[in-house]
Amino acid sequence: MHPAMQQRVDGLNALRARANLATADFYAMIGQEPPTMSVRYQVVTKGECAYHIVELATGKTRGFRFSYKAAVNYAQQLEAKADRRAREP
Image (cartoon, rainbow, N blue to C red):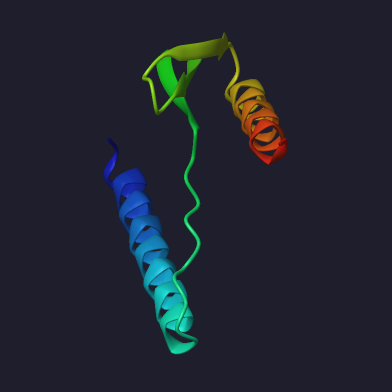
């Protein structure tokens, strides 16, 4: 990975870690457990212009797209569909 890109990734990971710690501290102040937000689907690059949408629980590919934006949109649709199913009795 290009050094400038790696530096940005490291910076974002540090910010994400600090945000998670701050959230946990705030919930500890009120004596509750912080809610867990788990991601079900992940976009994985498989080529120059190919992206798989992988279900993290099973490791299975649920779809593929040929642009990153379309892949992310599809992953968000799958997440929304799974959320709706989880809320149904």
